[in-house]
Length: 172
Image (cartoon, rainbow, N blue to C red; front, side, top):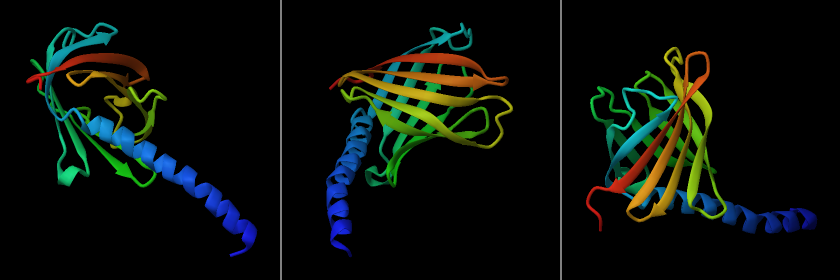
């Protein structure tokens, strides 16, 4: 390797280590609130089938902690969507197995204060005939409270925003 090339590679190593550490910290932050959560849902525009309904969320880390499983149930609804999060190379990824019959994949970016992790759409596997999730944000308030904000794109690209206020079902 040429001397200049060695210098460039050596200069890049700390930046690469920091980036990996940053992804790992975001992932660890998302895995920290494992357990049972409960709260309510609000939607904009007003969506009667979910508005003000109780929601139960279970977060667990299967596969020896190599994944995070988020399972949500809204009272009175038949669907039981699950969301899987994992590290994929240099990205923190989210795949949502949606009741609309598709699987949107999103990539994360973390706020500088590390209190929120935002996911933006990369692609969608399956049909978008019934819409798809487009964006998600997890915000950490304290060990017993967090919020989730999701944007669902209905057919014709009409957004529906859902907000979840969650508290730990069995506080520590």
